[in-house]
Length: 509
Image (cartoon, rainbow, N blue to C red; front, top):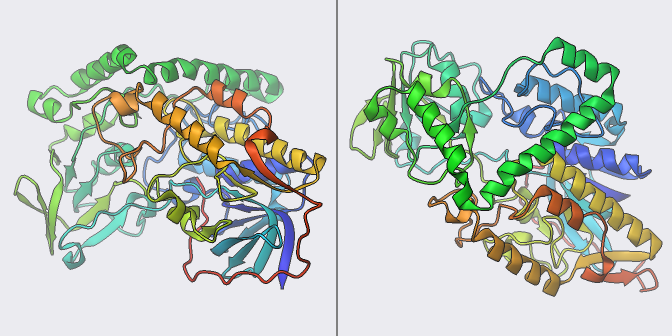
């Protein structure tokens, strides 16, 4: 049996929750949200490592339609963010649309039926007029293929799959990676371990984190006057555009970099260690990190910063590129995620039968980070070139969903069965994206980062402001799309394509 729905949403993290809430707000209730987890939350459900918290102010890292007056801190910790998403699900009526603990096996476009045929492993098959992909990139761990890793006799785990049953007290721990996750968990575990070796292939710039408890008076004001918090949300969004402007003009990052240099100099007195922690690229080229405790934790007597990559793992030790073998009984990977390997890319097959991975050939491309040529009635949330180095993903998600709702309204108004971004429009748009990125700190800052795909293209970042994106997504312009009207015959009893055997998770960010 194939269940027919108007829209199917993949993922129940921030993206999927935003999608479902906005559909309901627009009076659209015929949809289902699928997620592999037992609760919504996506990244914030899966990442439970010590110290896990947001690096965007809580007020901005919230939906404007669902403000939370009860954040405990300026930068919310993981348990509060997870609880917030659950609260949004409940107060927007989204709970009844969730299908949790469900893996998606394939999603295939049927030209005959003008429907997406979605096969799941535990909830049957669906036919959906519209597919909304909210399965974000921040949940599939990236674990390096290290020689000898399979011979290690100790305990290994990725920061996003934290082993809470493994007691770190008295352990000799090798942390591989020094990015956003390590900056948060290293200060939390360093006091407990016998020794910690931090393998740092590339240092990152770290800014002081202006974090503190939310004043009780401000929480009371937000409870009594929700409009005040909405105004604060908008104010923070606009203020963030100042940093956004600097990232788009690499030469303007000097003041920010000097702040980071002073922060490092104040917290690390040892000149040799300070030199090892000083990046050789412009701040913002890689993700900007924030912490008040990371640098002090690296000055502890039981912590060694190894400014080298790992070349080999042995049964009871780790070998760095400096040739030194260091004992370890626990390896923790802080090596991030498969950011550009979008989960939907391998499971979604478009009009010509190819998956998005096959179409993209290693370089994701779309239009406004939302639609992809060759994939009718598909909307990708936080899709290609919609990365944001200065503001909040929630801002972009809300803007994208306004665009999606506008598209659905246009389809209803014009009696259309399908909309698909024209290939020439997408090609011209991506040409402008590539040109604009050349002047940004991400491309011109002198580093390599996860923003660049296997073909050397920056497929991740959006080269303009969130205000620019807001203007571009305010209305759905049908002239940019290839459309099919309902007057075109559609087969009543289509033969659904056979699904591919792979199973891809649909947890969102």
